[in-house]
Image (cartoon, rainbow, N blue to C red; front, side, top):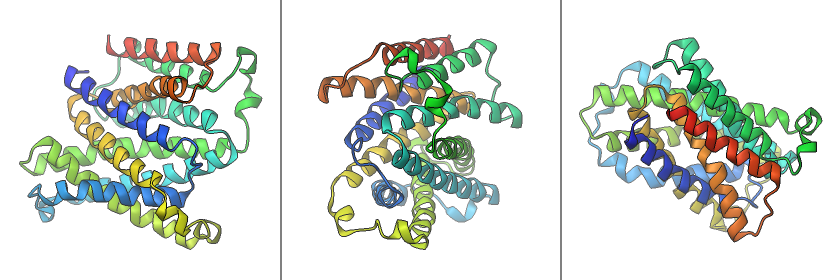
Length: 298
């Protein structure tokens, strides 16, 4: 991983942790993510409109990647909302972040996308995943399969599949856009991000308004509350940096692994601003994530 990629991902991690910290108590539902997606789209749209990209010159494969990225994002949001509804965010979020680390590496190696990670790098990713799995536990004695096998597990698995999907689709989509258009990397990433958010917004809105109990959650209060708008701006900027960073790594699975830095940052924010307690198990999980990240870059 290059220094440029590391700096971009680290900056993205800070933004990601901040917007997730803002919405930690919001118990997001698909309607909430719909507003977040709308805010993301509005944030990146001005950059996309000034990019000068000729959409008619982009190959059909690009549009397939864009559609795949948007649909995967919708799947991730639906899975997360289910997981958050049935389990504590402190349990669901780290687990939903843990699985894509290995899943992305497995899929990219299986499909021959990018350079294959070395055994040491794969071991580092396993350590990162182990840290994510350990973080939600209050005590080491809680480390039992029954604490993970609950009603939220399906949502966690769906969110992990969606995260893996949009990471791979978006990486290929940005690559195709930049290969066909002579624009700066950040401008191309912004244009792709705006198009992707449009697909995500349309598909997620379709789901929300088609399902009666989800449609019932679309209330006036949701649109008046600042949380989804702040989250959308933060999420847009954070993922824009990720899309740019994808061009500086040999395999997108490294980006997926390093995005887990947001978990230790989130723990620190919770300790200092919400005065949350940090158990020995959570601290060990943080240490494992950091050690795994170090092994991944060696």
